[in-house]
Amino acid sequence: MQRWRQAWDEGRPRAPRSQGPASLPRLSEKRFARLEAELAKGPVAHGWEGRRWAPSRVKTVIGRRRLHLVHTTQGVRKLLVRNGWSCQVPADAPPTGRVTTR
Image (cartoon, rainbow, N blue to C red; front, side, top):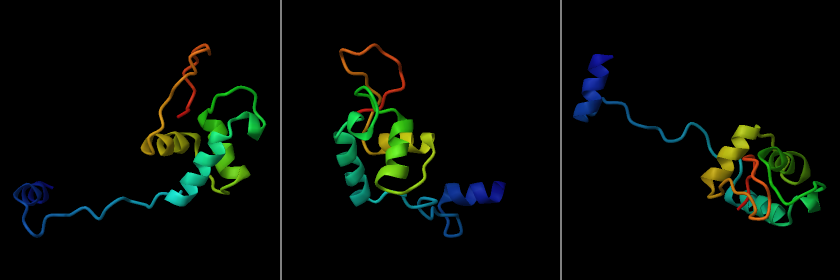
């Protein structure tokens, strides 16, 4: 392990190089745009009460409603954060900490 680390530190040709990400994103840019269009309709349009998007709700939209992909709730949160979304609460709503909206 020390020889590998030393080669990497010195930038020698035999030092390992990154092969890029381990996997490609499961939602292409086109599909993520479709997801954003669905989310813009609001939770009520998808059968939920209130104006909040929880990761579990977004997961349902991705999996069952339109895009037919399976994601974990944690994976959905990471997908949204990676695409510029953040956790927010509407100004007139009591804080709960589980809200993901744009």
